[in-house]
Amino acid sequence: MANGSLRVGRPRAAAQISLAVCAALACVLIFLGRVQPTLFDRARAYASDRAAPVLEAVRTPIRAAGAWAGSLADVFHVYQVDLKLKDENARLRKWQNLALSLQQRLKRYQLLLNAVPDPEIGSVTAHVIGRASRPFLNTMIVDAGRREHLKPGEAVVDDRGMIGRIFVVGDHTSWVILLTDLNSRIPVSIEPGNVQAMLTGDNSGAPLLVGSAQGARLRSGQQVVTSGDGALLPAGLAVGKLYWDGGDFRVALFADAGRSGDVRVLDLKLPAENPPAPTANDLPVTAAGLPPLKPAVPKPATPTAQPAATAALTQAQAQVQTQTQAHETGVAPSRPKHGKACDTDCLNRKELRQSVDPHIQRLRPAPASQLPLQQPPPPDETSPDDQ
Amino acid sequence: MYDTYGGSFGRFFAALVPFGMALLGSLLSNFPISFTNGFLPAPLFGLMPVYFFGLLRPDLMPAWAALLAGAFEDLVSGGVPGIWAMAFVACYMFTDRQRDSLAGLAGFGAVVGFAAALMVAVSTAFALVALYYWRLPHIAPVAATLAANVLWFVPALWLMNKTQRQLLGPLRGDF
Image (cartoon, rainbow over all chains, first blue to last red; front, side, top):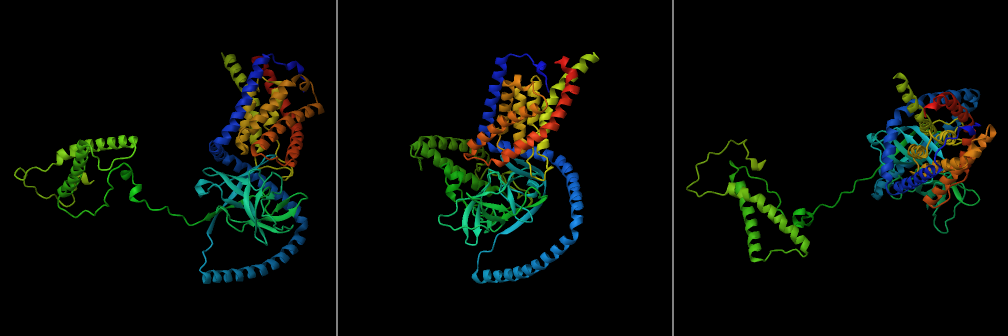
């Protein structure tokens, strides 16, 4: 390491300038990240999509080695683990029966009360292929993305509880922001008592509970679940247990994001809200000052297209004549209020006239004496105007 | 003619090695590998080549390379863009200003020198994150990161020394 002789002669001033330029560029990068976060998110999604096969390839032998090493240690505790599992299984069966009967009762009550049913929750199971645990960052990458219909904001859970939320979605990978991350904020509810609060990560192992209601009495050991406010996360997802660390209430998470290999991404399928139907006043034709279009009338089965074309011609002629008369007399039927809108209106009329005039000339009905006798075309033929 | 092409290739390759090591380090840091079962956070492998080659071979690790390495670290880690870019540049600035004292360190002193540069980088990132979110991040993960980086710098130093002496050293005349 001792190598003072390796000094490279270079102008000091140039080096200082380049350092200052680089520092300024870094500041610009931070500013850009603030104003254009989607730009970097897209780059991240692209990078993770491309790196996914490598991450997957690396993950497989490491998981296998970890499972093998873990199984070696477990060999010495098989008997105790077996007894513990049997005991736990017996207790869980009781709870399962109780839960099933309560679920049935709840359904009956909901039917009796004509209650709004709970939204359906779909899920996608994904593997964790990347994990970043940094002093200011706690994220993971999962191998499911847009192709699996994931969307930003969806909850990510493991078999014990909630881990985090999706925040960047690529084609077949997604980034998950963990509950412990500095950016994470989710609305939670503390049971029993239904106390509403916000769970905010600060990059420690246990996120902080803030914003609970004034006078709310919290106790260590209370369970924290998602409240479902904002309709982005499902309500009632288990998050953790409350404890007092001497200065604040924190939540000891049920899920262990550091050890989760497979996770589920929950999709809260809320009924879609239909936008209001457009009215005649919303149509661009009306906005341009033209009379609203009449609703389309089903075309009668005519042997020729001539009556339809004639009707269109008559309508266009009447419109042009009205506009021309209005132009000549200087009295517009409906004059726009602003000068700018009037200019636009006039231009629209001019364009309309230019586009309609050739059709008028072509389709102008000749005098009856000059009309040749026309044979009706075959039923499957249609005129170009109808197409 | 062969020598000309060979020399050009060697020069090009040698110029890429330190920067490539920084990029590779950033990628390695974000792999789902934890030898301490999540107890220690992943070290900043991308910062180690920036410090080492910025100290010994600033011709191969210029300031813009440090900036790009930091930006790549931001990209692959999923954090706020520019935080680590600025931290890497700050570390490079510190190394550039203290080159005379840091380049003469050996053994344990070299590790202490890296710890000082690391402290500058992490403090810069800490300050930027605190300003960005307008609240102080938890200090324990920062301390754990410092410890993990110092521990991992020892094997990384051996590797970078080996690269410097055996791969880049013989090509020094080409630069």
